[in-house]
Length: 77
Image: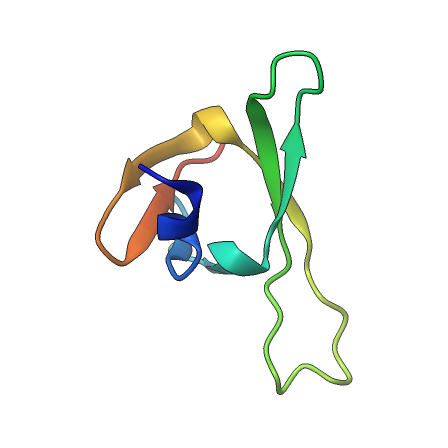
C-alpha cells in the first residue's frame, strides 16, 4: 500500500471509539537509519477548534490493527 493511499483515512481508537483525525493531517516520525515509520502524531483539529487547544497524540506504527477502505483502526498500548 502506498502512503498516499492513507491520507484521506480517519484514525479511530478501537478501545475508546475516539476519532483521532485524518491521517493526512498527521506528522510522521521516521527512523533515519532504516527509513521505517516509527510512529505518527495525530492533531485532531477541526475548523471549529479556533479557541480550543488541539489534542496531539503520538501513536506507534505497531499499534495499527487494521487499515480499512476509509479508516485506520488503532489500539492503545
